[in-house]
Length: 375
Image 1: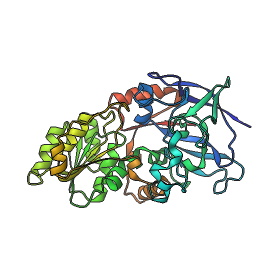
Image 2: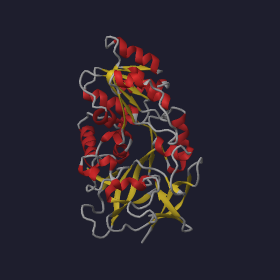
Image 3: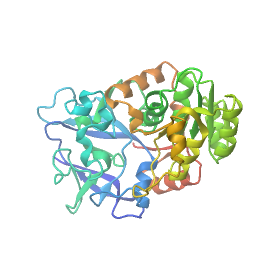
């Protein structure tokens, strides 16, 4: 039987999250139903609320960073059973398409309907409805702003039951995206000078990743003093309020050349942020753009001559070029070994009903990561 639950939906944008009664479908073949333990309050969901990231179906159930316990398994769905603990990946992985086959699961073809919120293979089929029968999309096919949700197994990674769900959930987006931005997409190497631009839920983990990779200088940039302090606790060697100071420092320790890597993890990324990062890297330097902003905004104001003559590179990164089905488990192993900090990332815990307060706190610079805790 379908399960009655409660969740935070967005009816239109710009708007605020509204906690309502919902019905979560019985899992079909290839699906599982999960009782959530925790959900991270990621900035990407706020991009839906502001309208920066238009979705293909309203209402939509928010949340894409979550972990929980499997309560039901669809027929003919091997590999999962009731009681399993899972982390959700906001990017599905089919394992069969060209991109999965080439080791780029983060670009899996199954993700075509991420912002429709339907079943992956049928844009007209939804797993969640309001109590009056209105079909509800699920953010990234997940909808972790709900007590119970039904998802495709392509979006779930089974984990060790000993790992607390409130920290495990962070690896499904914020930690994985930031860590991968440094380690995978940025290919930070020992001895590099690295600038991390924006030290929120993503950037703080880019700091951790760059430090783990052996960078000599990990330079955190954020206008919020609390975030700069947190960055230095988690691996930054230096921290500045603005890019001008950070770039000047990077040149001072590289014989005037500039940073090797600049990782753009700003909450609302604009063309000028990328241009500042581009200016801050030296010859053959790489700028990795992970942050999102208005998806319709066009243009990066950089001098084309410097792009060519200095052999600089600008690249985008989704989930930090990581493969969720394997890299989530690797990050959790590093956590168990004490090499990746997760508990320290959680600034505040909220009830589902307090979700809008959580996002107000994020905008006020009070959170590295706010987390919804479910009973």
